[in-house]
Image (cartoon, rainbow, N blue to C red; front, side, top):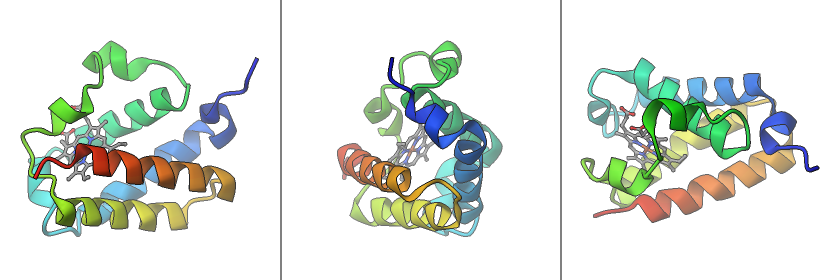
Length: 121
Ligand code: HEM
């Protein structure tokens, strides 16, 4: 059996990464208005999604159904500029994180690819 990335990275590290990401979003004038004053809800959704994506408990699906990320991002203008901001905020959070470098690299690749995939403008 293979040990999940969720176990290797650790729940607390995932939680803190997502929390630190939203600390950056609070300072981001382009992205902040998209989150409609529900940063705590958004933080919870991204945390549950990441935990599930990395092989942890499937609580995101239980609460939200299938992720369908492209569809869920359709209401927002995700252009190159928005992607750049999102990734910069995540980079700052990753740089503060205690996650081992090899997993940070994995996460960074995943965020870059998904950010590109989610572009809709
Ligand atoms: C490329 C730039 C991106 C922008 C501008 C963006 C913006 C947003 C916004 C405004 C929301 C709604 C917040 C909420 O949940 O209420 C959201 C939700 C979400 N985003 Fe992104 N996002 C981006 C990239 C990503 C990436 C790379 C991921 C992959 C990890 C991701 C995963 C999610 C998830 C899981 C949700 C919650 C969906 C739900 O259950 O409704 N996003 N995003």
